[in-house]
Image 1 (cartoon, rainbow, N blue to C red):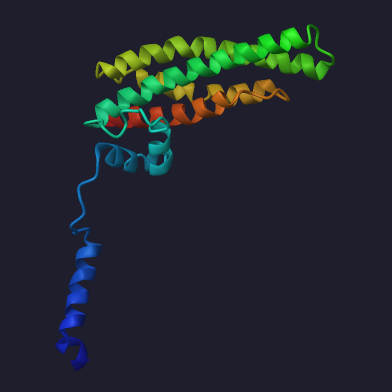
Image 2: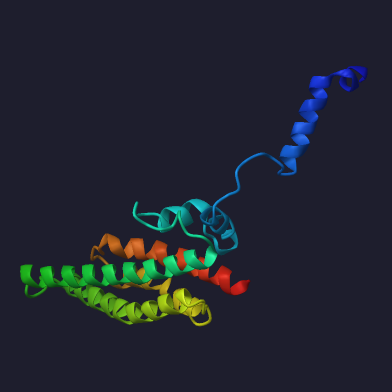
Length: 192
């Protein structure tokens, strides 16, 4: 016991441990992206999912954003763009399928085509709503946009359920992630 109180090295280690436990360190302050993404855990969005979804493109302004409102506008804009891309991909897949096989060969093929058309209808309704939400969030109005993004989270999974055996374009999965992250960000903004 006497050894612990007389050792300057042990005392320094104890102080270092105390400062580390208290969160006091010399690290640089985190960016608005890191701060926002780190605060979304209550929405089941990890910091990694948030950052990778917002910063998927090297030309994205995610890392240069000056604050949470700018990131919320970016996320909502990306959700609208991803929904538009998913809709276009589904339209293209349906057109290619119709050219390749004018009449479905089986009941399963007919059901898959019907599911894809239903999925297209979901996106046809979601795209204008998401564009409205993007404009609202960009103007700092989160009311209503949060609800649009909440509903949009279910478009991709609804498509997966309706498409059955049909292979959905990869844009459907990308939109799913973006809608979840955009909703979490806007919901966190409207809660403050």
